[in-house]
Image (cartoon, rainbow, N blue to C red; front, top):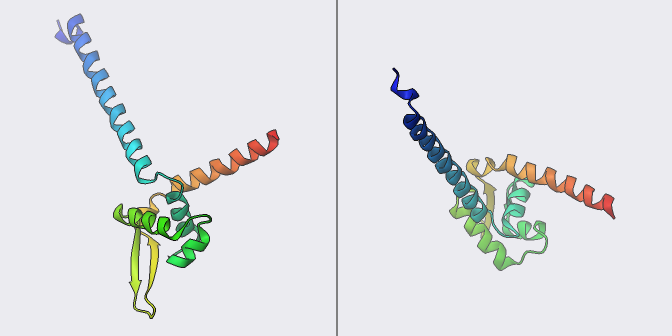
Length: 132
């Protein structure tokens, strides 16, 4: 008789499958948490969206296009995004010195995520406006 059909073996196999499933779920939850930490806050997604939709920008252009952000906060957020390899910072040989910011190829992998957020946001706004 095939020993795989014995009840004790079926129970062991179910436990293995459930354990693997649980580990996979935990791995996905951790990945989602890491994404939230990288993109957390009020400004990072806005900065990435501005650079994705409008192209490379200098610091002052970003400051004008990310409405409500201060220079110090913009500098901090740009630094965080650069550390996570989502954008590049290029110092240009001009006088006075200017700095250009651009989305990296790796950062461009967030385009579908940002597009989905934009789409959901437009739908949400429309839904809320209809309720008023």
